[in-house]
Each structure stands twice: as C-alpha cells, then as structure tokens.
Image 1 (cartoon, rainbow, N blue to C red):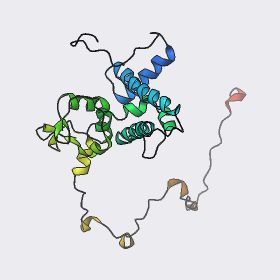
Image 2: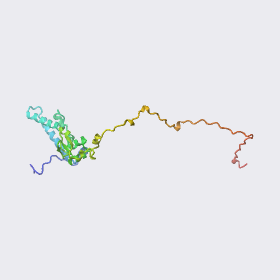
Image 3: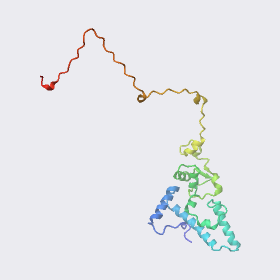
Length: 239
C-alpha cells in the first residue's frame, strides 16, 4: 500500500540511463513542447501504456458476445474521443497506433500555445504557472492538465490577469495585429496612373552620338607665304 504521504510514482524510468536514440528523441520532445523535465515525457508514456494494455486485452476478446466486453470497448473509445486523442468512430487498432505525442499535444501548455495566447511553449508554461490562464470558470495552474475536446474553446486569460489588456507587452504580437484597425487610404494619396505624364529620362552618355567634326577654317593669307619650320634631327650629331 505504501505511505499515504509518499504516493507511488505514476511513471516508469528508462531501464538504461544511457541510450543515445532515446535521449535524442526525448530532447526533441522537450524542445518541441517546452517541457520542464523528462518526467513529463515518462508520465505521458505511462498513460499511453495504460491505453495500449487495455486495448490489447480487449482485442484478445474480439468476437465475444459478453455485454461487459462491449461496455469496456465503448468506454475506452468514448474516453479517447472525449479527450480528442482519437476521432469518433475509431477502433481498438487505432489505439495501438498512438504515440506519446498524441498525449503531449493534449496538455494545457500545448493548447494555450496553439490557441495563440502565448508566443512560445515556454511562455505558455509561465502564464499557466503564474495563474494567468483559466479553463471555463476555473483557474488552472498545472501545465500538464489534460484538456478535453469541449474545453478548448473555454481556455482564455483570467479576468483578473493583466494580460487581459490588449496592449500588454507580454501578449503575443498576433493579438496586437488582430486588434489593430486597418489603415485607411485617402483618395488624395491615390494617383490616376492614366493622368500621369511621362517623365523624360536623361540621355545616356553612351547612347549620344558625337557631333560631326566642324570643318577647319584656314587663316586668311596676308600676302606673304607662311613658312613652316623644319624640325632638326639631333641623331646626326649636329651635322
């Protein structure tokens, strides 16, 4: 039975502490869902193991006409459908196809983040622990609270929380964008493209052809012949 002040653990630790694949997978889940420690993964695996064991025991009795068997199957599938883990009309085979992410996705922390009430899963965890989130009329401070399908629409900020103010800096920017009014464009700022006159472009230097050379004007003769001096060749040694 155990001590009443020391309840039994609701999860099982890994059989071997150093398993590379398992450690890598757990680290990815912690980063994806913003978990505080790996115990939350082990608790989800324990819950999943409970569902699978029950489904296997019921599959072993397939074809039974026992009313208790039908009642247990209906209770299991109805519970998973109510928790929005499986869709309505699922079978026992679908229960065996579940993994730990189906359980982690139903945590209050994950739902708060997916609803846009927090910018990151870590911020969603902080809001829940600090009492800023309510489910219906009840304030829930447990990030691992399993949300039912009918409770998703009732998740919101607590009425006494400062996050109710849309302009609060801790709220995600998505809410600020939704609350802003669209910018109105004045008709004066809109120009009619048809009435615009084309602006002449400056000529390109490369495209301008050089002008034709002007004819040289010879100086008028003053009656005397103009003598052009002959250059002296210095290579002949001054001969």
